[in-house]
Image (cartoon, rainbow over all chains, first blue to last red):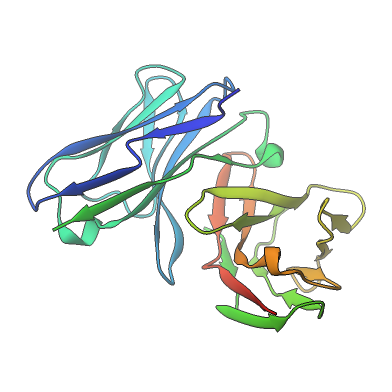
Length: 114
Length: 113
């Protein structure tokens, strides 16, 4: 049982390049989330999804797009990377029943934009 | 939207000493409360949670947290810390329906030998 898996774990981009982060979960969770973690700012929600085919904006959505074509996958895209997007990105999932289960996190993806 | 406040960004403590990491939240409705721990270069792991019932909850590694509704707090405590407890600790609140989770900015606990 892998839980939540993120790929890639590390990536270096030049300003203006594009990339996609992939999140996969094998727990049949309905909810999936993308967070970014920056020093002194905790975790900030970028986008989230309440089910296959649906996505919604979080606290800091600008510059990112997401897609949830399959229930187990949640993709985070950067169309034109900027140095301000240098961060550690975490994917998480949770059960739809309630918030009682809590979030299950991936190991993180460290992105550097030069 | 909810807000979660962790007043202490860094907490240094000597090994075997007690520690308290503070967490306050803003909410006038029922919430679920969580503490997560993040070891260096790893993802976040659930440490403990309060859903309902007893206001004192415990983890398997000696941490405990007490839900105080009147003070809207969920402070994390451990009577005797170990070197291995050095990590970042995040308090989080979940409000239903919606499965929205709100995080504090984290407290870096450093245990000094």
